[in-house]
Image (cartoon, rainbow, N blue to C red; front, top):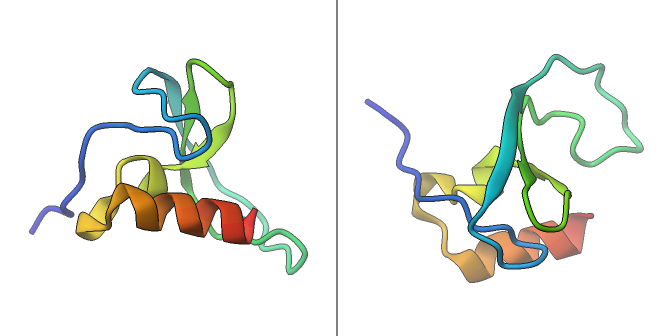
Length: 74
């Protein structure tokens, strides 16, 4: 079953323009709350690297929830 996701919206600036997407392998870093994220999308407006699960609101989370997670954890 495919993960439910929506179109890109940057939780930082609200842009709907992605620049590029990256699939990465990272070392887990206890000081980096996003080190577990393996897929990111860079915003075409503010150039912020956003975890894909927030930028595309995987699992049906709302834009407000994505913004809250982004701002609370970043």
